[in-house]
Image 1: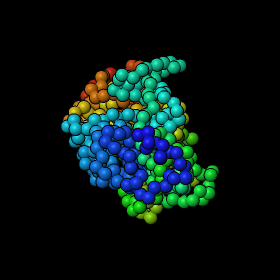
Image 2: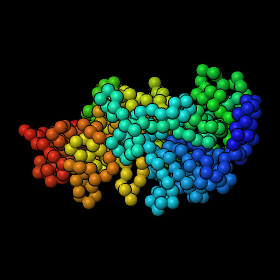
Image 3: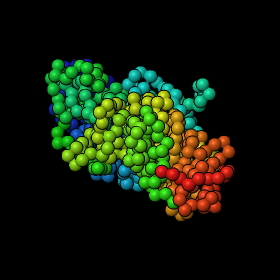
Image 4: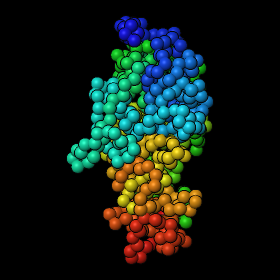
Length: 241
Length: 217
């Protein structure tokens, strides 16, 4: 691990990797991963496919959703690669529900804002915070409760993760990232939170080509970057007027 | 009895000019179809969009532009995108004026359950727990009874709670009720529904006082 972080973080000029397989090098059994996206929107498709191919197992995955049966994190569930999911909503995935109810899969469900803030806190060097979300519910079990200004709050801690894997619209070879529309969601928060952050982008450009006013994730948070291929961008609920 | 569309239409009457509104999945989403013409409301979608527009045409569909129900949507002039932490900052800090949610159960103290049926269904709370813990005003849109005909308006919740003492108003297929310290206060009846019908379908404390008017649209 020590060697790993030295080589991946030491040389800022060397963040660009060839493809997803190279990007996920070092991800091994039992690690904790953050995966960006909301539903199937803004998920790191290339990296997920590489993780499926790699066969890495016993992963703990922090991601708002768990994909669908045959796409996204759902593919990792089919391969029984996930030991534990930490999510806010998993309703679109029948295989997930089956594994959960049968006890094969461990799951921690969290309020969506809590999930987001636990990522943000990790990336901001803040170990814990208080939120009203989940007070008086199962989510609060075992957590410190404190009153501020007459209202009850529960303490939530920053996530710890080995790798964060995010998907951006555009990125430069230094690691600066721009996200598109609602594909932003958890991606910039997770990008800040990984011990090692992998970014896959639709378009990789040279430094200087992105407007500094428009960059969402500053390069300092990103360790590895590559231009993905063959984005499917599957739509869960194609709805027209 | 009200249809789902009529429940949404009645809730739309609660909207006020300048409101920021978060609409949950299901009946609440339909409220957007009945916003009165003479007011402006801004829809917040917790996956990272303020100023949500209508569903797209076939040509406008963009896989990167969805709402919290994962449906394809559009933007409007003045729309803005943001990350999930910023989205819930808006919600927790009380800037969203009205939240409309579906529910599996509501009790007469304003507690709501809508995220889990132990041993049977686990979907998760999504943004609901953050919304109910912080929203200024929460209206629940729901059917008065479940498929087995049992009341969903209870004295005590049987399902895991989502939030405590947060629901202010419930609009069902049978009636409109406010939730106060005294319980469910019957305010309006759906066409063709009697007080006795509501009493028979409500398991929690029900307050019926004075003349109860029919719901107007």
